[in-house]
Image (cartoon, rainbow, N blue to C red; front, side):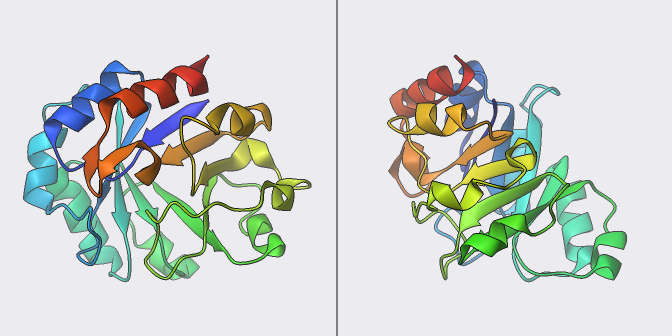
Length: 195
């Protein structure tokens, strides 16, 4: 199972996640988030990381130009688009991207069907709230194309993994406090996800 540890704010947490076999690290470029990191700080961390680890920048309500510039400055490999955009917007991006579905009801999980997407529980604050989606919503969904986020933890990842999702994206479920990771929880989460 592909795993992203999101809300990275320091090098120690990044290194712990990598040592535990995380596939990707998420950096939040949304100033209203308690896990916000400025591009300069993200770049300082990113340049210390191995090339095989994907660095993903999370964006809310910005222009394609801002995404392109921030990804270049901060050395991000991919942009995670947490708001509704049109095809012209996506066409203006110079980096690979993953779209996010903030699911309010069961039909939402079918949005962008057939493409890899991240599906998170709808919350006003754009993620990191630990809210979980009812897994029955995914009964007829193409789970092999879905990265599941929202309310994941070392306690429930084995159950989620058994349902055949492409990946898992965790933030608050492996934290001591907002923006500070619990290294024991990161290791436990990844050990179970990768078993």
